[in-house]
Image (cartoon, rainbow, N blue to C red; front, top):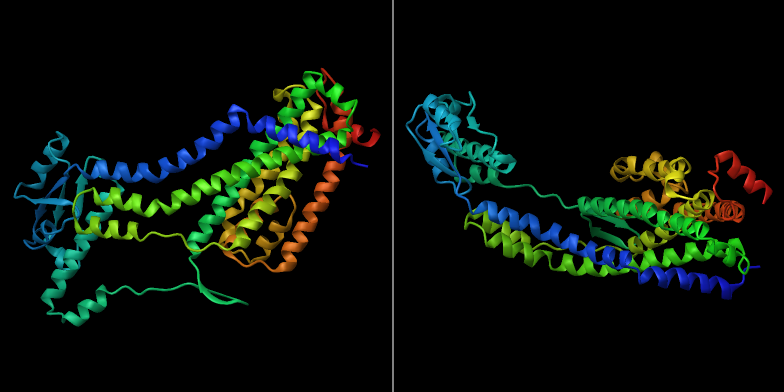
Length: 427
């Protein structure tokens, strides 16, 4: 029979001791700071790089395309009469950044524009040059054919597709791409948590074992209660950290639109910059169902309990972390395997492969929240998965407690898998 008073005492000790630790405080603060940097730095860097005027010489054989490019405000073009050979020499000496050679047959749908640079143009610039040349050539060819304005409008119009999901509550708009990314983020967060907090449990057991504190504790508390208290205390610590991160993330995402709009608007005043600033200001997060958050927390807890039981068994079998590599390998593989299936599962969450993998107790903590983010999971699948995970935890905690009972009193000996099996049977 579990003594609740002693169990609660152990939980409080594990929780508050680690809550006040420098590692917890620093990591809790550092994560939102990193989020801020990831949000602001790309826009700042883009703004800083956008202040530099970049000019590319245009050798135009058509006599028309170059004029259209000069009128473009995305990249700065300069028409030149200098021969391509001379331009090439100037580029080699570093006197110019790059140049374009536009053949006359390009207006007949033949040939191709050549863009020469020293490898410093970058993907954004090369993509913009490609689209500028394509747009200008298209407009000139339409002018030659006296294309009516109505036809031009048809060619310029974009066909929009709205994604809708249908459920028992009705139909609603759904941003599939956003929810897929959300699923990936949740999967990787739980993936990191399994490693991070599992290692915390393992080190805690090893520290108490090597310092002989556990001998005093074990004389008044049963190993099962001690193990459960550790697991529950660190689990609450993880939830506390996630709650702080969730609040910080919500505030940061709410401020993402104005921040991006500010830095985008502070760049060069072009039509593309104005459009980007408008899109940034209109940035908003699609609604996220409460069930997704509930599922995330639930599967994090169940996954944490399963893997913490395994890590505790490893910690009780070794005296130092360097000796635990061999015993950790099966646990690490169980955590890594679902990461390998993240994309197939999120891409087709209702497939047989996705359903089967997400219901395996060791894979469910990572894969089931991913599926929940992009699909409304049938109740029977959720229920069956939760039951299987609870049963798995009960079995593992029973096995780990038996290993723990013997392992915490073993010193100076590196246990093998065979010895762990013997401890589990004999204790």
